[in-house]
Length: 430
Ligand code: DOR
Image (cartoon, rainbow, N blue to C red; front, side):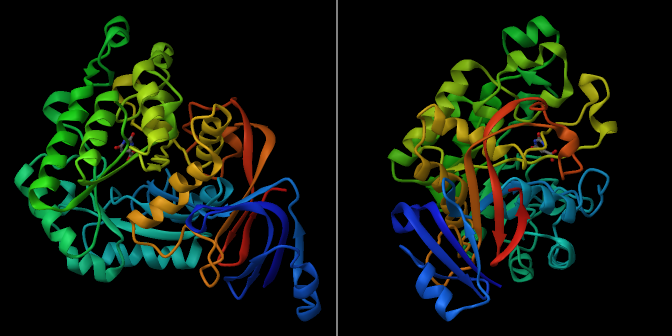
């Protein structure tokens, strides 16, 4: 397919491009970018399809480095195909999927299964993340080299922390030698101790066991120390507290190789939303306070937080429509992440290029993917955003099987209207 996309504002931070231009896609690659390409391209390529994108923003395909696809094992929550369909509808062209399936992705055959299933059914590029420890149980390392050969792009026990510091040290050393990033779910489970929401005034009023901010911060501090001691790197998942932002900022100032992500719910919602005991707001780490939200925004603005990741955690009705204590943690996020993140531009916390860095370029860099840019010759993965489109979140319209979103009914401005993967239109919401 040959596609000529004309008239959009093209933003590609990797090349320092932010201007109104045309872009030509051929054989799945980006063939040319420039002003007024119409005449020269059309005279040479009669079969070219031209799409006028006046008023639209065209960016390198968005990459989500923290998605939970539930296949194998929990297909009623999400399959690789349904998660990928949700991804394109949300503007994502690549997703990296966490290993907490059933069985856990702790061996080559599960990684190969995910890759095969993705190749057969998925609309996007799917990159498996392997477990750090067998069964993510925290006692014995998986076979990193074998998993890497099978196709994982990172290691994580996400959903569970690696509580044993010695094991984490070995994991970071070994992974570093293989150039595999370690993504750390930072939670000291002795401190979080089956808590259900942020510890503070609201947990007391609501009578729900609290999870203190230090449950996250103590583990981040530990992982920073291990990265420093071993001269390796670490990526901190789903940052939710002001203290975490401070620790990561200090580590970066000292030149340590620490990167971090947050998710849209951590800069959008506070613990106050739990007052109705609605389990759609139950997530781990928990929603925090206004003070924490302000610090997360500051961290995004000053570059302390490198990435916005969805932490797409789809669940079935039977997981969520139960007593608060028994409800599963997580938010189905692929289809609302961009809309919520665009609020950061409207509120002048990030510029457009800064947002695209956090949702495409840096995830690509951290995962060592040859993506996140519109450079000539790279894969034609492209997201086209209508920045003014007003829409209302409707979970029944989600492509994800997970309808568990606290954002149902919320008004949004800005949406992906065209998602192109490898030069092919995979989502057309025009
Ligand atoms: O809310 C969450 N859901 N946090 C996690 O760490 C795991 C995730 C899931 O797998 O549902």
